Length: 317
Image (cartoon, rainbow, N blue to C red; front, side, top):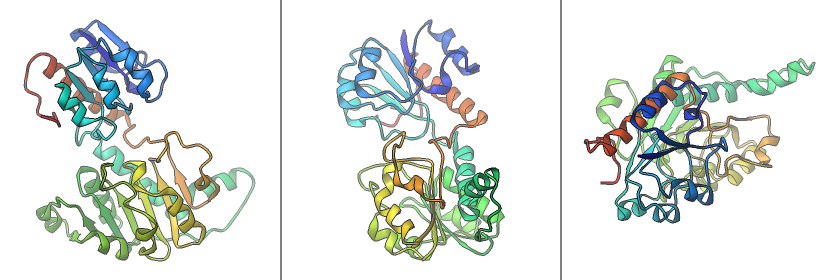
């Protein structure tokens, strides 16, 4: 069976034990030689004869899917699948699977790292000091502040746990909120508007779908507390970056931490002009532990489907 493997951390020479398992299953493997997510036109010639596909953050459009006559499984290396045209895959009879929860600790810890970095302007102070400066910059403490979490899934729960460790008040919104978990961990369940209005720090943990596109827009930002900090480690399109820039320039927003952007990689973003913005290159899931776990799960999902076994992580039955 021919299998395409595109995640950058699953390429030859990266020392992945899970990849060795895949090589035992199939000797006919095709790899991503560009070292980045692939576009529609780059995917089609690679995928057209494949039976299986371990997918990174590639753009798997209807055109891509309709070009695949042999493909049986798109096994996402990660929990999100917003870059996969799920309806087109279903119509074509191609299963799509994901690896929910395996990178929660990694992404949650990065989200909290961004919170600390923005609250104390650590990257700015580091760069200034290395360049001979000795500036005094007044940050904010986290103790006693209100942490608002939008999306209390596995990643949101890691952020909540970290916030509790800093003696923060935690409030959360999720359309499918786990009220029992919230009760057990003293997390107050709120509406979206309550989160927006009451939080000192807001951390986003949502999929990018039609209803969440620019969920954090000019109107939402205008309702936030003066000086609020906004963190996004999920998908870039959830925040209207132009609106965020204007709010940062006016000092309505106190800071912004991003691990995801509307365009990736971002180029010439005005956000990069600001010293209260901290950015990372969509690296939330990139810890050794998380990449190992995601690789094992994604490869097992693919092997299960191509072997005719049940796969509990198919998202488009």
